Image (cartoon, rainbow, N blue to C red; front, top):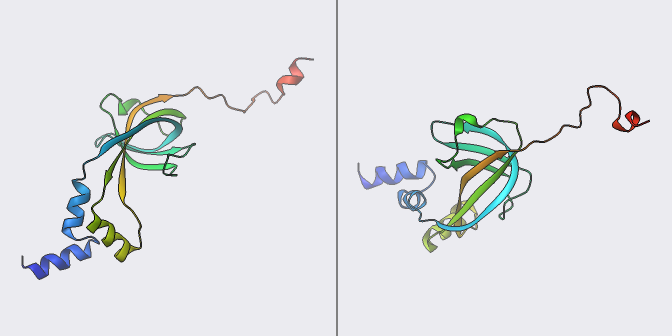
Length: 144
């Protein structure tokens, strides 16, 4: 493949090959481990990844985490969508090169100096009671 063809191919994908390689090979440093509650939106058992919705935001403000890596200690076959869980999430970050920061700012108007990686260390289903009362009576009425 000629240089011109290689450049055209990388531009079609959005990022030049060098930038794509930097992101794929980023060296992440552990930052923090936090607990949050939420529920699974999607679970990919084969790739051991999931999408989760959090009730409390992460330090960077997000409440949805796409393709979070699931620890080998967590049995994906036992996880269920739509139920409330308490998650233990490990957060890592990697610094981007000055060259990639400039590319993102110039081409995409994105001001970013680091990227984050999230790992799901544990997921414990919570016993959350429903407000639904099938008898139709209020609990207070029962006390009379």
